[in-house]
Image 1 (tube, one colour):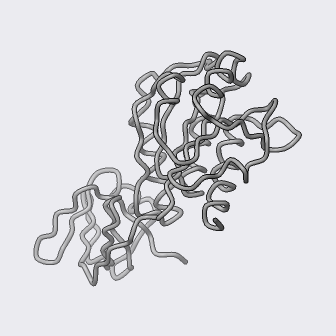
Image 2 (cartoon, rainbow, N blue to C red):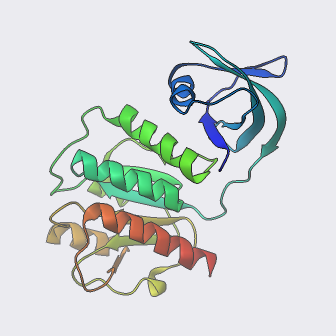
Image 3 (cartoon, rainbow, N blue to C red):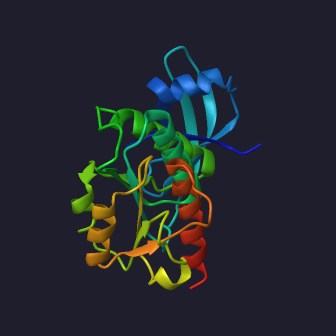
Length: 233
């Protein structure tokens, strides 16, 4: 069984001990952790502390640090521009993209986005943290503020891709190195105007096969494929 991960953005170490409170303490309680059980604390910036539980109280779990290490960030930067879609689908896309290795996430208000950002950033952050814990991603992806499609096209990157259901070409010729920016459309797809604008801005239109994928599925598939291509360049 893998060692349980605990996220604390700024862990306070006092006498070799870290006191875990609030939501992370609750998660450990639900998991029925025991004294002497190993855990790891990470801060989302690559710092990891190996620890062992020394006490489990009503309001806190206390762990003693055994060792620490620094995990280097991934040398490939994957920037997912995800159109705003219905809540459950967007949450799925965020969770699985983090597990697959995305490093930056930019929500996009596309012309056909059926929803707008409505104060869901705290919820999105929790999903990202839980996905990072599960997949042992010790560097949390950066979650940007939502932007318009036109603003997303201004983001600088070596590889710049718009996933398109129609007129999309193969992925490999569109790869030019890292950072790789790839934009995933909403339910209903991009408008002709958006695709024309992206083309004028130097983006490559890329397809993911003959079928039509849901937006959240396309985000996960694209993240995996781009990571594979970058690792093999």
